[in-house]
Image (cartoon, rainbow, N blue to C red; front, side):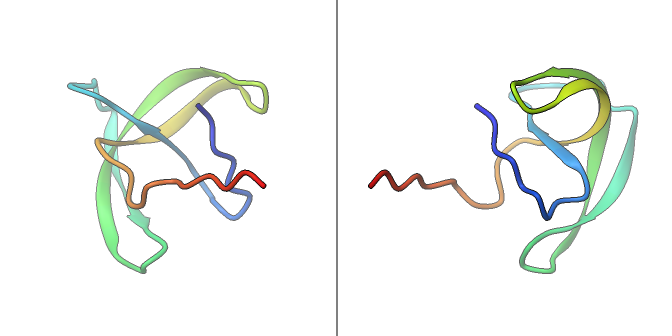
Length: 70
């Protein structure tokens, strides 16, 4: 599943379990909370974005995504 956020300045992946972090980076969330997240370099292959990129690794989303189908 992919969510495109055109206002975001970084890519985020939700990681279940352990990941090999390449570092840590500060991220300001939508509620202005600043948290340091681990980073990783991953190969992304989605319909919208296809390349190797540095991502922030989160265990859970800050806010669940709700879909409205009309």
